[in-house]
Amino acid sequence: MTDIGFIGLGIMGRPMAEHLIAGGHTLHVSSHHKAPDAELRAKAVMIHPTPKAVAAASEIVLLMLPDTPQVEDVLFSGEGIEAGLSAGKIVVDMSSISPMATKEFAKRVEKAGGSYLDAPVSGGEVGAKAASLTIMVGGPQATFDKVKPLFELMGKNITLVGGNGDGQTTKVANQIIVALTIEAVGEALLFASKAGADPAKVRQALMGGFASSRILEVHGERMVKRTFNPGFRIGLHQKDLNLALQSACALGVSLPNTATAQELFSACVAHGGKDWDHSAMVRALEIMANHQVATS
Image 1 (cartoon, rainbow, N blue to C red):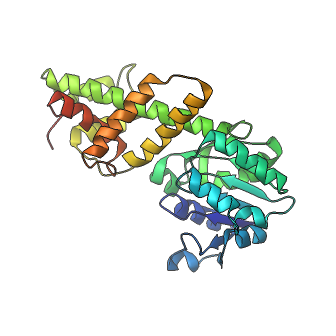
Image 2: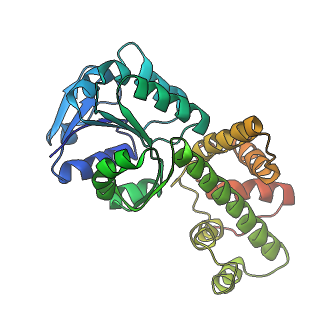
């Protein structure tokens, strides 16, 4: 049994925390941020007033927060995790944030005596609930080995990619591929529908060929059936593509199709779609074509 700090009990964080409790660990959480509900409080959870107090009571502290500024605040504010660290403690950031900022956060945590892993995840709420998340890790091998049993309670495909920042870089790469593949599937189904073919049958045919993908399977079906209730919101994917484009600018790399995908997401947001599922990127293409892939 390990004393584990967990900050960020949102849509993803709550089921992840429950898997850790089910694994026999005691969870330390902060009431200063999202406090646990009554059901979670009834389990092996200890509540503390600040992230500093959570860190002081824990061997390993996990974060699952929305973006870079929130992670920085929880780590380094006056009552942040940094102030509660001592030698041997480990901080694991499972949020999706800036790879550049992550490298600086790791240095500051190490200076305070702790060790740092960046370990963003893919798989969404479904993967969090099923403990089947893909976990992409950056940091020292020895720290990864200590934390891996916890990762195995939350995910299946767990990879130490490299040093600090490499986990976040991998997550950004993942989000580039996902966005561009959604765009490709949207264009293909829109083209087929406008040409008079049945988009459902076109999708079915393509699933048996080289164009087959998980996104064609899941999000192609969403486009045909018009089911854009969020699994992963456009607003969150925009945040991830911002990280990609900002990092690319710093590196002197051009990502032209990533920029196009971001503009399509922005068009959706302009039409009230910030909380649509990211498969609804196709709606921006449909507006330009004045044609819908399918009717509900």
